[in-house]
Amino acid sequence: MQAIGICRFSYPGDGGFQVEHDSLKARMDYLYAPARMDERFATFETMMLPPLRAQTDDDFTLAVVIGESLPDQYRDRLEALLADMPQAVILPRAPGPHRKVMQDAINSVRRFDDAPCLQFRMDDDDAVARTFVEKLRQAARDVAPMAARQRHIAIDFNQGYIVQPGPDGLLAAPTQAPYATAALALMIRHDLPLSVMNFAHMKVGRKMPTVTFTGEDMLLRGHNAYNDSRQKPGIKQPDFAPLDAAAKAHFKKVFNVDAGKVAAAFAALPSTAR
Image 1 (cartoon, helix red, strand yellow):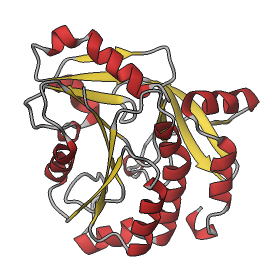
Image 2 (cartoon, helix red, strand yellow):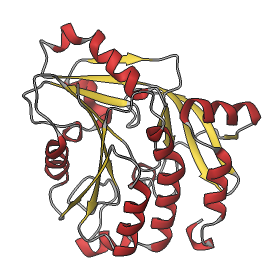
Image 3 (cartoon, one colour):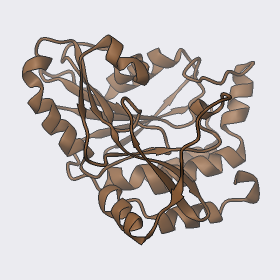
Image 4 (cartoon, helix red, strand yellow):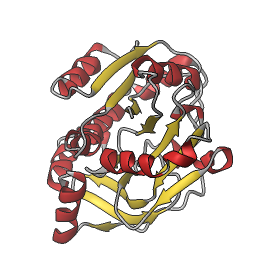
């Protein structure tokens, strides 16, 4: 079964944001602001990529969707970061309807063979456990009899941490909530051209059968000032605590995320990016 992950790296689409902008130019100005981009690269480099580079099953594709308008300095930096990661494919796209653009991007790297396709989505400050692709494939094999009678099934690994990166490293709060973006995947019928991005992640339980696995840390969900879902008033704040030595070792072992490297990356940011 082919496994495909997709990351929208500051892609200025039409839709896909809970926070709206008055124009496409306003959205691009927001997305490409230097302070924001510096922080996005810091999380992408120290949180999202390390566990993907260390997957126990490295047979997957990572589709990184960018805008054709991404400034050259950021395009060059992104290409340099991914140059030694054979699973990564950078897909420049013009602005367009968010779901359709993402569906087309995924389908451009999809094989459409006789097996279901496993698809997952990641924000650039998310992370999954080093065993995620391996466990996802095992779960897909376990639910194969049910999948044969369904268009799509959600496979949800619901346990991990909400994390807030900064110059002191990581603050973390345990989480065990259903259908977070990180570590949620869809198993899509072999002939169906829909994608994981055709569904609001929190609503998959209304659209298809779901299978939830818990009891093992499988995800890190980033929490920062630029999170689209954090922009509305009344959002509950996690009960964060600093990582102690044991927790730092756990994060390194399970996620290949080094709290010291996170701290160094954020300490190096210009003060306007913090």
